[in-house]
Image (cartoon, rainbow, N blue to C red; front, top):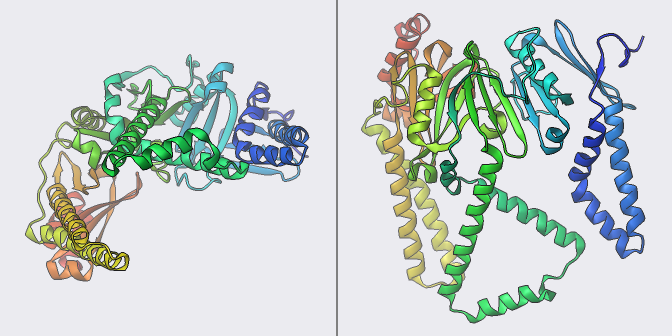
Length: 502
């Protein structure tokens, strides 16, 4: 017998999704609909083509709602969907690792939310977990509590993802000053530029016939080159900064990190689209401070969670691991200390890896600089450019390589404090990982030919949390053995007796 929405236990999504799904599907289909309408207009039938395409998208969205049913049993979460191609997904409840509650503006206006239930393996695969797009706010909050915290009945919260608890961190509007020093503005501008360029190509618009653009081009051509370069650079910097600020406010406005009495962490954020992520305390294995070069230059950092089951396939922001957006370093460290319930790891001085590890930083930077110099000289000769241009570019490349090597050497190190392994590395994106010793399940030693000659290894702590492998780079062999034995003595000491290290 085929089970339907009328079968006991099976439910449909909220009927108000009939107002939401056609609109969201039309928004997603705009890159296809716009060229189709323009094509029809050039052939004398723009309106019928546009109406037909819109109707197809709306019917598809309606069928998706009508054919989707779900049920929550004592053992699993099941979702069935599709008309011609019927699909059924089942996620055992003991495999549920994440429950993300998201509500974009239309959802919020109608009191709805979207719940994504994941197994935590990866968010790169679309077939991982299930998604229920169209629950009421109360149902979404209750389902999250039921699946993650294990409560069979819980009062509905006033809005998706806002349970009561001790506030660990709350967004300070002044933190928006860190937004221009992230890459979000560049990514946003590139994405918008790509959309505009595709729309221009699809509509066959001739930019040379637009008077404002042609007038601007004539003025720039008549101006001194230095002034043009400065003006264009300033304009690009202003646009990128504004885009970064807008993106920061959209993503993190209202950000709040709370700890529930049972140790569970709740993160809520978003201006237009609200997102809530729950991290169970028993799945938390550590914290990470992320400091990209520009953000570090102005004293900022992010705090990320190292937890079992949190998805990291698309990065910190998309995977739900971010606990604190770009903020002052002191705040990021304080949040990490509260998450770890240990004050020392975020501030502890690192044990350096010695001169041989430092030399490797410079030798690798020098090798890259030589390759770039060869390419610059080759291009200069091919273009018959003045010699001073190649000399200036080469000097700049060497200076940047040396500065990055020195910065990488300063940031390289590790320590073990309060049972927490702390490791640091990187220059372009420096990361200080603080991993609880109890969350480490094994060690890997790896050494390249160059590392073996220098007496260094890369020690990798394996864990079920976060990226599942965290590296202590270019550590002396004897130091690596001592460190591994301090964390997992029963596991490592038999191998040390057999001298099995690289």
